Length: 308
Length: 315
Image 1 (cartoon, each protein chain N blue to C red):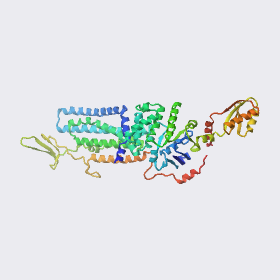
Image 2: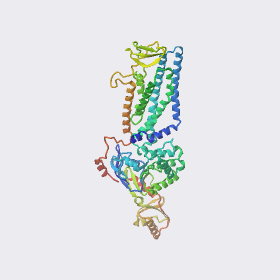
Image 3: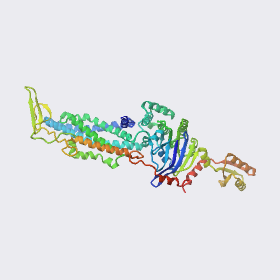
Image 4: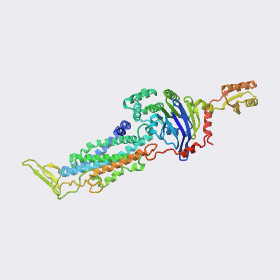
C-alpha cells in the first residue's frame, strides 16, 4: 500500500533523510519511531506530497507522490503534529468544511460529519465551538478530519503527543477500529513502547537512516537480543561469576550495586536454565529478576549508535 | 463552467464569511469606518451648508457637491488603501500561523482556489465597507453637481483599486516591504491631478465662448441647455432661467493621447488596476504551494543522486 524507495532529502548540507526504504502492506499499522529530528516528519510530509524528495521515490497505493500528488491526496488522510483548528467554527462545521474541500457532495457531508464524530466519540460536541474542546478532543477531531474523504491510507504524525493516559487509550481504541475497517495506518512517535502495543509493524529511524524495520516481534527480538538478569547472591560472588561465565547462553557478567548483572541470549526457558544451573552449583540465590525497560534501553542504544 | 464556478466559489469563502462575522472585530471595524467617513462628510457638509445659506445658486451648489464628493471619495480611498492590504495580508498569514495551510494543500482544492477563496473572502469585507458608505455619499445629492453614473464609476474605481491593493498586499506575492508600502500607491496617484479626473468629476476649466441656449413653447416652461463654443449642446437640458455664469466644460475627463487615447480616465485606471491584479494573482498562485511545481519545470529526482545515496553508508 505504501512503498518508499531510497528516499533522500537534503536541506543545505544536512541529510535529513538518507536512502530510507520500507514497505507497508494493506491493513497494517506501521509505527515510525525515532528521536526528535530523526526525519519522521520529513518522511511523512514527503508521503503526503507536501515536500519533494531530493532523491528516491514514494508511492501511496501505486500513485507516485512527485508525479501525481492529486491522486495521492485522494487516497491519503494526513494528520500533522499540530491541531490546525479554526476557532470560530463548531466541530460539525469544521468537518463539513474539510469534507467540502475534498469535494464531497453537500447532501452527504452532514452524514459524514455525524458518522465521524460518532467514531471519535464527539457526537455530543457537534455544535460546540472548536476552541472550547480539550486537547484530547481536538486531537480526535483532527483524526476525524483526516478521514472525511474515506482514505485508504492514514498518516498520523505524533497523534498521542501531549495526551493524558486516558486520552491515549481512547486514541488507541479508535486506531484499532480503523485498522479493522481495512485502513493502512502510519503512526510516528518518539516513544517505542507506546507503539509496540498498537502497531503490527515498526521502523526505527535515526539521523535520517532506517535502523531496523519489520514485524513488531521480529524488531523487538532483534533489539533485545541480549536480555539482562539481575542476580543477587549471598556471598560466593566469585563462584557465581565463574559459573555464569561458563554457561553458553550468558554473554557477559558484571557487578553493579552489589548484585550481578548477566546479559544472556534466549527466552524464558533459558533464564530458568540459568537459575537451575546456579542452584545446582550450590550458589545461594536471594534475588533473580529480569530487567524491565530492556526495550527502551535497546531503543536508545540503537538510536545513538550511528553517531560516532 | 462548473470548474470555474468551483474555483471562484469554494468552501473557503463560506468558512471565512462565517468565522469572520462571528468575531466582534467585524462590526467594530464597520462602525469605526462609518464614523470616520461620516464624520468627515458631516464636517464638510455643515461647513458648506452654512456658507451656502446666504447665497445659493445652482452653480455654487454644484461646486459644493463636487468638493464634498471629492473629499469623501478620496478619504474613502485612503481608508480602504490601508484596510484592504491589512485584511488580505492577514488572510494568508493567519492560515500559516494556525498551521492549517498544509491541511488545505492535502485536500482536493487547487492552490489557486485556496488563494482566491482567501482573497475573495477578505475583499468582500472591503466591498461591504464600500457599500456601507453609500448613505453617506447620498449627502452629495443634496447639493447636486454629481450624477449617478459618476458616483457609480467612482465607486467602481475605488473597488478595483482596493482589490488590486489587496492582491498586491497579500503575503505570498509581496515581500513585506511592499505590503506596508502599498497604501502609498493610491496616495501618490491622488497626489497627481490624474486621479481627480480619474474619478470622473467633470471639473474642467470654464469656457468663455460657450453659453446657454434656451427655447420656450408658447407660455410653457423655458427649457435651456449649455452649449460648447461651436454651439453644440452639452449635458442635460434643464427647465428654468439660464444661470448667470458660464457652464462647466464637460471635457477633461478623457485621455487626450497615448495607449488609452479617447478613453475616460476612470476606464483606463480600472484596466490598469485589473492587469496588475491579474499578474499579481498568477504569481501568488505559483508561489503559494509548499511544493512549487512550476508549469515549465516539473522536477524529477536525478538518477546520479539516486545512485550515490543508494550506495551510501547504511547502518
